[in-house]
Length: 254
Image 1 (cartoon, rainbow, N blue to C red):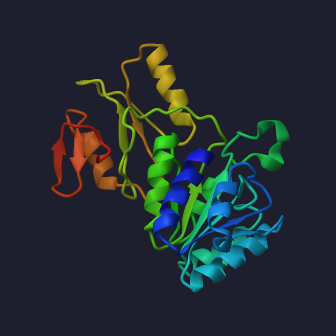
Image 2: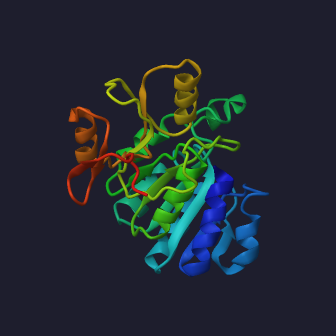
C-alpha cells in the first residue's frame, strides 16, 4: 500500500503545488521519488514526531495540504496531543499517514504494533479516518485526500498487499462502502476494512462461503444512509447517494 500511496501522491503533487510531505527519518526506497521530484516540498524532520505534527500544522496554516508519514504508532500515539490540539481542533489541512497498521510490524513487538491508534484518532473532532483495504482503495483515498480540506488519518498496510477489487480504479467519496463479492438473494454479509479485507475475501472464496463481502474504506464517517439501505434492502444493490435510489451495479461509484 505504501508504494501505491506515494505513487498517487506524486501524481497529485504534479497538479497541486500545495502538497507537502514530511517524514520521520524513514521510508527510504519509498519516499525518494517524491523527494527527488519535489525537493522544495519535502522535509525529513527526523525522529521527532511531536515536532513533525507541529510543523505540519504550521505549514497547513500557511496554505499547504500537508502529509506526515511514519510507522504505525509513531505519527499517531507518540504525538497524539499535538494532533488533537494543533491539527484536529484547528481543523487544519493535515493528513496523518501511518504505514504498518495493526500487527504488520509484529516481530518488533508492542512498541511498533498499531492497534489502539485507530480508536484514538477516530474520537478526535473533524478527523476523517480512512482504512484502505487494498492498493486500489489506497490510490483512490490518496486522490480524494489531495482535494479534501481538513484533517484525515490514512491507515496503510505495510507492503505486498494483494489487490481485491476487480476494477483497476474506484472512485470514492468520504464514507463510501464498496461491494466486493455479492451473492444474490443471500442475506449474510461480512463488512471488513484495512488488511482484514484480503483475509476475509480469501476465506470466503477458498471455503466457498455464501457470504456477501463489503469493504469499509472509512471508519469515520460512514455513509449511514448507504449502510441502512444495504441492511434493509431485500437485495444487495447499490445505494445512489445522489438519487436515493437502489441500483444494481455494485456499491462503489465508478
